[in-house]
Amino acid sequence: MARDGAVYVCQSCGSTQTKWAGQCAGCGAWNALVEEVQSRPPGAMAPAKGARGRGLMFEGLQDAIHPPPRIATGVDEFDRVCGGGVVPGSAILLGGDPGVGKSTLLMQVAGSAARRGVACAYISGEEAVEQVRGRAQRMGLGDAPVKLAAETSLREISEGLKREKFDLVVIDSIQTMWSDAHEAGPGSVTQVRAAAGELVRLAKKRGVAVILVGHVTKEGAIAGPRVVEHMVDAVFAFEGERGYPFRILRGAKNRFGATDEIGVFEMGDAGLAEVKNPSALFLNTSGERAAGAAVFAGIEGSRPVLVEFQALVAPSAYGTPRRAVVGWDSGRLAMVLAVLEARCGLGFGDRDVYLNVAGGLRISEPAADLAAAAALASSALDQALPQDCVVFGEISLSGEVRPVSRMESRVKEAAKLGFRRALGPADVDSPALRMTGAARLSDAIRRIGEADWN
Ligand code: TYD
Ligand code: MG
Image (cartoon, protein in one colour):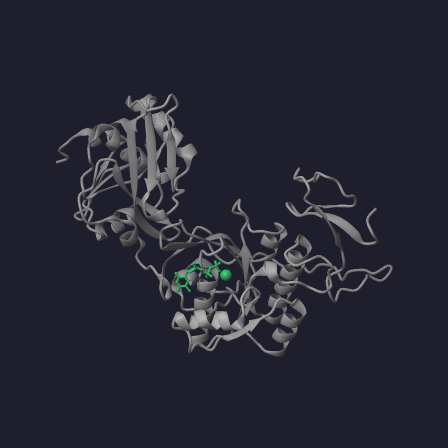
């Protein structure tokens, strides 16, 4: 029997049950129910008998709009993902694998903002002040007026934030914070939820922007209950492929901006450097383009980004040929292979197929279909694409090449980087770049098979 006020909370999905069971009725996870004592949020009183609300105040749609003020931190790649700077009184959750560079990024954000006169605090629950300071000094932020503290008690933190007025507070990490109003241990669902709730409340009440670091589980989700993601105003993911220095900040949710925006950084000896021109980074512009390579003119958020798709099609040694893909969706690859087989007569049934997006970027745009198909066909036909050609277009199951969004920006970025030709959904004839339009995938593949493009 549960004690008075105690419930069983699933550590996997956060659902609560009154009785313990081996399996969670909410998500089916085994051995995930843990007894936790529920209590009211701190400061909230029990409602008096017969208490009544004051009633809603309704407003019209035509009333004036006041865009939220923004704090520009000076780390442009970060500010852009926020939607033009951090909104005072908002809460941001930053998730990412251990060691990807979350603490490094946020120290740089705090340091840069503090230098511009924003009152910043960095509260670490994972490292000692000495360690945090040492890292900041190594990154050349020794002179930035950021206030450091090592603390995990929410009571101490909220007391401290009441005493001193800050504009921006970093909490590293939410899983190390605990409230003495709850019996559950730090890192438990109850504690994470309570800590996030308390900090978000504090942010709203005092007009402080709070950035919470969140650990990520092996499956890639932010550890703790999903409700934390709903409590905050924005959720960002900090990603990086192992072995590459590039780090990508991606918006997963943002109440104050677009979510398809990315920020690109490069991890070096002195912390993270902002990458203002990602195309130059992801692209190998020197040397011949080999058979199997196609440059995709993509759009990430508001920016055009050029990346190379690399394919290798080789005879299979096994009964079941291999399909391996890095940086792109494997379902999408299967679809493109099927369309190439059915509509263009290119057979992959007895061949292994490997597809890789160079540089460690993950592409999710449908506009990349034609670039992937071009790389695959180029490898299968052993015919390299011209060095100065970019490719983009969506492919339908019937084998048509469909127009995509923002073609002009794609073409412009390619021309800026010295590309003179494009293979895409429509003819474009500009002095800088000539795009050959292919209405069907088979037309594009025929074009790739031609040795001479002129
Ligand atoms: P960190 O910010 O501690 O990661 P997280 O908070 O996400 O766990 O970064 C850890 C990694 O970054 C560590 O492996 C070392 C590397 N690093 C650099 O390469 N250069 C630097 O200047 C810093 C500060 C870290
Ligand atoms: Mg860290």
